[in-house]
Amino acid sequence: MIARVTIAGLALLMAIVACFAQLDQQSRLDPSYALMVPDAFSGNAARERAKMELQLGQGQAALASATMQIKHRPLPAESLTILALSAISAGEEEPATDALSAASRRGWREPIAQLASAESALSQGQYQGAAQRIAALMAMGTLSAPTEELLGRLLQTPEGQQAFAERLAAFGRWQNNALLTGYRAGGASAWASTLARANELGADFNCNRLGLLAKKYGGHQNAADLAKFWPGDCKSS
View (cartoon, one colour):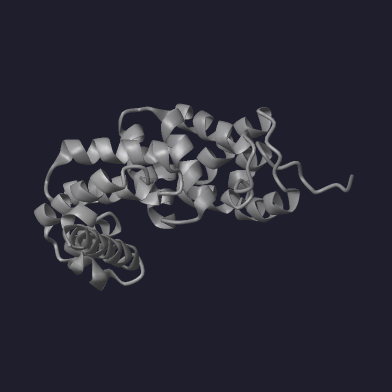
């Protein structure tokens, strides 16, 4: 009898655990389930609760939920990003900075973390780090407006131009799409100088794309800048 009761109790316990685990997984698809999951089983649920609390402006509650989800799911970069945003909302600057830094190292596909890291690097004069983060954001194609603003600031100095020129010359598929963006962000002169530096480093831009950019430099006043990067026409090989 005792053995049967014990087995039945274990079976019931396992069923409860499985139920809460399923609810935790379901909360990824439907955040309303997040409120039904106990703390001990809250991996995904705690993250979804943190998101909801952030939207409601409940910074301290969001930070508590985000801290809990880090305990259950410490590896995803998204977990660190949610923790950082929650800490910012709660007015906790130091843990926010630490979490954003870790998130940007762990997952380059986390745009908010990359943006924050780029801002931090740029404010400290770390041009190489800022250029790397900005290039990652441009490759993702997200957060376009703040990314352009950061790029414009980066290109204000020769050191920033050199750092971004190195990213333009590196392997990637985003560089041609960045040609007009850089013009908008940095202005005609700074962008022309950056492209000239990139060409010296072996950058391989699509000539037709360069031609579209060259049209932006129309007028005698921009002739010197245009000559820095534009060969004059696209000759067939």
